[in-house]
Image 1: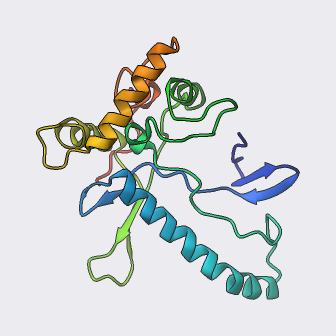
Image 2: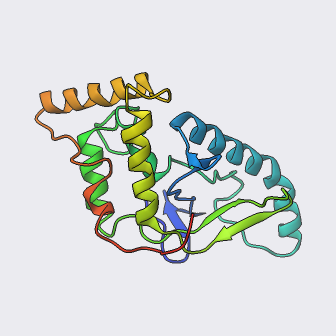
Length: 205
C-alpha cells in the first residue's frame, strides 16, 4: 500500500498524486454515524469533487498551478473512517494480497502500520447559521473513542436497543467465527490495541 509522504503527496506506479483524507470519525446529529451514513457522506464528497475539478483545473492551470496525477480526477475519500472499523469487520476488503474481507489479518496489519494509533485530528462541522464551517483544530481523540465504544456497546451491537444493527452484528460474528476456524485471533477490543494509551488532543467534539 502506498503511503502519503510529509509533503502530502503519494507516489503510485511512477506517478505523483495528492494524498487522500484519512477520516477519524463522523457524527450525524451529534451521534456516531453508521457505516451506511458514512459511505453516503463520502460518496457525496467524492461526487462533488469530481463535479468541481474540471472548472478548478481550468482556473488554476491558467494561473500556473502544477497538478499531480495528470488529468485524473482524484477522490477525497478512498476508505472508511477509523472509528467505524468494528462496523467494517466482515465487509469486503482488498487492502492486502490474498485477503477478500476485513478480518484478523487486516486488523493485525492495521496494528502493525498504526504504531502511534490514530494520531492527532481536527474536525469541522457546518456552522449553526449554515453559511460556513466551524473548526475544532484539536480533537480529544480518547473522548471520541469512548463515545464510539458506548455507541457500539449500548446501541448498534446491543440486541435490546432500537438502533441494533442485526445484519452488522451477524456479519461481525460470522467473520470472527471464520477467523477462528482459520487459526486467526479476534479483536480484543472495539479498536486496534494501538489506538489506546495515547493522549492526542484535549479539545471538544
